Image 1 (cartoon, rainbow, N blue to C red):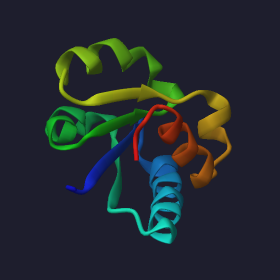
Image 2 (cartoon, helix red, strand yellow; image 1 turned 60 degrees about the vertical axis):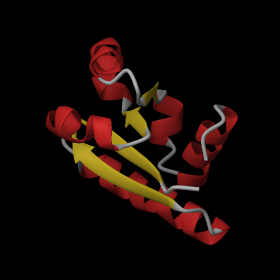
Image 3 (cartoon, helix red, strand yellow; image 1 turned 90 degrees about the horizontal axis):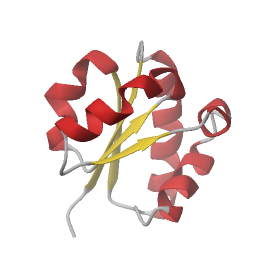
Image 4 (cartoon, helix red, strand yellow; image 1 turned 45 degrees about the horizontal axis):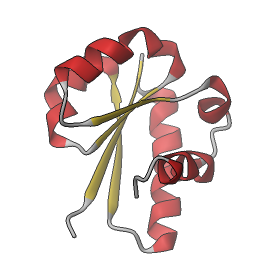
Length: 102
């Protein structure tokens, strides 16, 4: 099975890099072949077609529809304030698992 690639986007890339590394630790502990990267939203068109899942932080929720349209072959998920604000990698991994990812 190929590696699952997840990209997390927010307006600046700072909070997502923290939460992305926490998610990566959860996947690594599970022995899952998953790569989690964090980006500034300005990078979405550059990397959106090269990943399996795009996670959008709540502060850029306005971009959900346009991101889905621009990347029809990539799963796009808008995180809630509770999910993102938890800053808990396990919470986000569980969100993805509930959606059948990972």
